[in-house]
Length: 397
Image: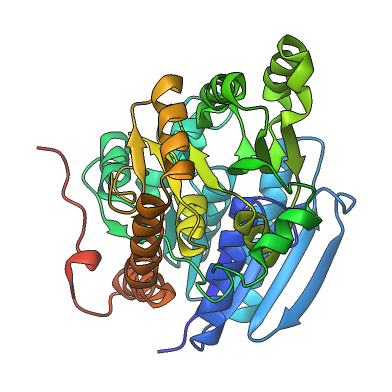
């Protein structure tokens, strides 16, 4: 059954970053499935009070200007969602992260008398509940939403810890395997990016301390002691408050300061090309992390190494689809990177299995079906559970 869905997301393509890419992927997927989708997203490029609209393929995107006050921006978002419901007859409002958007979606939905869904991503819950500015509104949204989705059981249990025994539906991460794949000109991509002759360690997303930036830099230092051709490519952005970590590392390593580089990207296709230039993708997160970039790298047949934390260990199977190392262990990380680069037979085994896993377990139709099931349930339709991936995550007893 076709639905009219209001999507609230803090970033949407062509904005940079993982949330923008995943939001566009999900929205496009829903539109292709026959749903009418109305995206509402803030834009710092627009003056406060202004809005811009674009419609294509059953998807309407409304970008609105942000205010100096976060509270005013939230109220503007809420008003936009209410107005869109009245004009378009929305069936459900859906926030794509447990952050600012969750309050606006849930508050507007309750005001309009329609259900709200909040999707949690990797570390958004940890970030929100430890930020005094967001804690109360995010906890309220998690408690009041008719349903919450989580990409893994571990993250679902975090929701239960915070918001009680409530409906949490598994919504697996997915990947567009037609975009994220091994490209026939992968070697040429390296040349075009100025990485010819380098052993490239890649990171994708917003580089910051919590995602293991310190561990990554320490591991790079160890590898450079043996071979000056190693380079670390940060594909995406460097978190402003953590930029000093890279600057400090470069100051301490003047002879190899250019071994760290930043490559910004906006589209999924651009990111896929950068991933094709990576010899290894590393995500040594210190705490819970989203696995989107890891799954994308696996689909590109780029070997991956991650830390043993929630959100990652359920995706990468150690010695089968990638390598898993202890968190904050730069020695183990350097060893894993070295093994993935130099052991060609082992690398091929892992990348082949990783691509197969992405095609099977991260297929877009699985994410779409799971999300549609959550919509049906909050609207009082559908079966209580169809398969394991649709079951409500049990609370901790």
